[in-house]
Image (cartoon, rainbow over all chains, first blue to last red; front, side, top):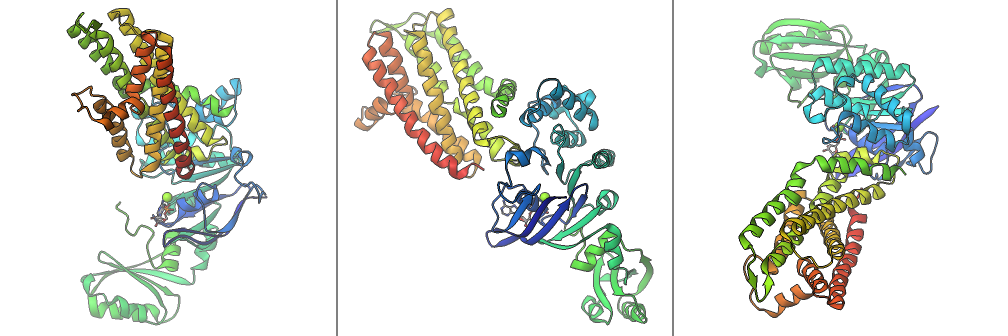
Length: 314
Length: 242
Ligand SMILES: Nc1ncnc2c1ncn2[C@@H]1O[C@H](COP(=O)(O)OP(=O)(O)O)[C@@H](O)[C@H]1O
Ligand SMILES: [Mg+2]
């Protein structure tokens, strides 16, 4: 069953195209890993899918509905974990959950039970009576997630739930997602960390500059670029690397200089490596060389010529 | 109803926001106490000064009661939290109104407590206390509406906040409470027909002097301001609220 679908969605901010004819279908039980660098349009995609911001073109379906798509009935079946922390700072963890549980229509004993359960689920039971002001970054993130869980949504949307937290909290959150999947929750999970997507996603959708550039399982995506190879060459004078000349060589798909390392993606084939190496040797001095197994990072690099982490201050 | 269920949480948030309590209760409480001690039983033209000053003081702080509604509407609808609120299966406009209602009620309750304190401890004559609380309620309502108009009409919230301060301080200034205003026709007209603190004071004072007709006239003017600003608020809100 299709849980959510968008067809030909266009969203502009002024002259900037934030979503560029996006088509996406999400099926029951899937965990979609929506992967893309900062500013790719992930949050805009989510806000559009949930009817929170107007869009310029296209259509949206939720739970099979094409009309009254954003009805309360449909919202009742969904949960949103916002990218920013949006819990109430003056309410305790428990009160925050009671607020959301009540708004989702849970009452009396049932509400109490679900609140306890959500607290335990994200490991905040012993801090239930504290306000988020006293929480660490990771604990706040977990509360931010729990607020979308008390009503047991069929479809959970998580917008970068692990941004800016310690590895331990991150693992905790990834385990939470795993548990939700086992319970049959359909999840749309956005992130710019490819390791997360590689761990949890049943299907990966890669976005860049408002466009979906590819989608498939992790293995499919990697298989698609398997006819290419990636070599890293350490050079002594990176300033002299003739990037444009390298790109012009037959078989070379992409060249990227990172510090003193030149990363080259080329089609697998006789002579490619040889031509590349001699040119680099001639101009910049080869110090070392490694070939790597491709991962999602390379899928992104192959398709966009950029690295996922480009421009990120980490 | 789900929207009504949220009210207890808005109230909880409010009670814990000590800055609000400080502004709307502690500061006027201290001022009323100090002024009452300083005034003693001083009279002017046969009238107890304490009566006038204390009533004015309690009313003056009602001009700032709208800061609560404005802050909460801002937090819930004009920060990232708006996306969380919008994702919920409830009528968000109604939720906005309940938030505004709680904020206004809180201001009224604190005003009524202050009035009660001046009566019990300083023997201030408010005339009819029920009528006075009704007038306080009108002022609090007007303040909330005016503050929301500011919230909806400027993009930057800190500018809206400054404007709300201009509203409060301006009304006090024009009323001549800080220093005497020149006897100018425009200023007199504003104080007679528009300045909420003067309308409220006249409404209470007239009732105290058994001049019910005047009392209702001033209350009616306050009510008229509320109706006009409410319509403006709705029009702006429809455009700006998510
Ligand atoms: N409210 C807005 N007004 C103008 N531009 C916006 C707004 N929100 C997002 N954008 C722009 O849209 C693009 C996509 O942003 P976003 O969806 O937040 O990306 P991501 O979530 O992938 O980091 C960015 O270029 C961003 O600057
Ligand atoms: Mg984002």
